[in-house]
Amino acid sequence: MVERILSISGLRGVIGDGLDPQYLVRFASALGTMFDGGTVVVSRDGRSTGPMVKHAVIAALTATGCNVVDAGIATTPTCGVLVTHLKAAGGLQITASHNPVQWNGLKPFSSDGSVFNRELGEKLIGLIESQEFNYVSWDRLGEVEICEDPAGPHIERVLKLVNVDAIKARKFKVVLDCNHGSGAVDTPRFLREELGCEVVVLGDTPDGQFEHIPEPTEANLGGLCDAVRKAGADAGFAQDPDADRLAIVDNNGRYIGEELTLALAADHVLARTPGEFVVNGSTSRINADIAANHNSTFHRSAVGEANVTAMMREKNAILGGEGNGGVIEPKVGYVRDSFVSMAYVLDGLASGTRTLAEWADSLPRYSIIKDKIECPADRVGAACEALQTAYPDAEATTGDGLRLDWSDRWVQVRASNTEPIIRVIAEAPGSEVATKLCADAVATVKAAVS
Image (cartoon, rainbow, N blue to C red):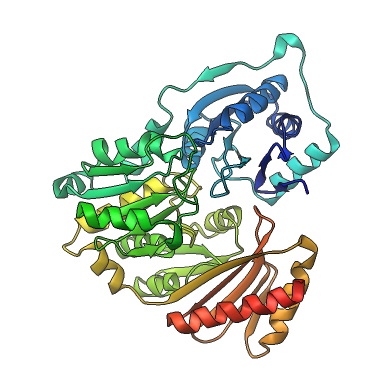
């Protein structure tokens, strides 16, 4: 079976089994045709297959007359910021995010520095399928320019959000797990030089040779938890390979997770500036409680970064994000950003006397359990139908898989946009209840799709 997934969000596939130079050229040729000879920012995460992918896409982009700004190894949010900083036609991040090492992918950005919305994504897919590319003559080929300090404009925007002097005065000790991803390039500099932290770095070479499974979940971050305890650190930060997501370990070496990344940022930001706040339908209800506590208006979008950012623009939201550790701050860019997440957490700690563990424990408590199962795309509907039948007393919300709500808990099942799997998420006030709800839902789904 060819391992390649094309969606409105972009492309992911296994190198040598679905993601080959020919298909990469098709994708980038379609993108270059859409950008119509404009400037395109190209960057990549640290995967060893990145150079091959980059050469293929740059060849296609310049063949369609686009000039390319090569940002080298850089984070996904850095790519988005550079697009707006340079007033480029768009951008292209080469990454497979948290997928295993054999995967790589392409994530396009529009001229406003955000990921493609449905309209742009469908237009791109149409061009890829039709192969009606606008290749130019020899004398109109695009040129390539190397970007010397890709993260500079990104870091500058983030620093404007926080009290840098207060953070520096605290001299926080931080353990940073880059796991050999693109965060290793500039995140240590950001924390040390710009925020005055003492930093212990794990996986500081951006070569894509992951030391642990790249998704920053509790099961994969035991080493970070141990390192925080050993160092006596104030916090542990774990980035995914393209550094748009952040998971957090508190000062006791306890994994407090991806879900609390957005919750902590929201608690800090909304306390100072109440306003509109947007999360997706798979994100913890703790964020609704935080919004209410700070007299802010809470909204849920469909799952997907593009859906969150679209609603953020519609509502003129001051903050948004996803429960996978992705905070979206419009003042920096409409893209998930681990730099923003770290800055807000450190700013929150610097503005008070609480430890990170005490801050996390002061927030409303829920237990959220996430699981996934392999599932063919044509069986997703059957899975949703079976789950709804199993829980007739729940309030059902369809359109983005299926979400079932009760007064104090919920469960959701939906197909991933980036992997051939179904995600099952359950949340309840206690871990036993949430675990059972998730396990029962998984069993129901498995029976329906087998």
